[in-house]
Image 1 (cartoon, rainbow, N blue to C red):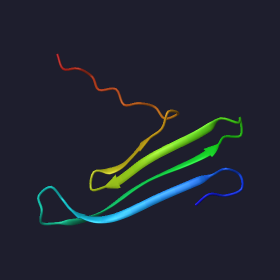
Image 2: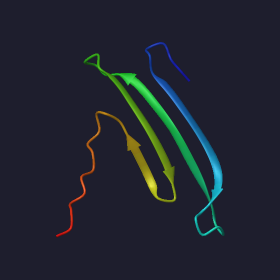
Image 3: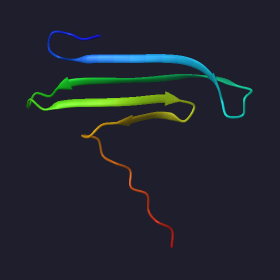
Image 4: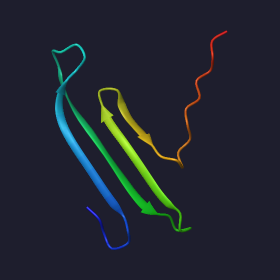
Length: 69
């Protein structure tokens, strides 16, 4: 949906099998965007499944993995 202030939201869900193939899980994928109080456009995309909730957006901190020794 979209509203008058420029906020948009989109989400889809589906039932799928896990990698093991014997258990079903619900997977949700979506995105939302809005304009911050400072006037900056903010966009987030996400997925939620058996591995948890994972979001991506240019304003979100990035995960940095340490290299092994």
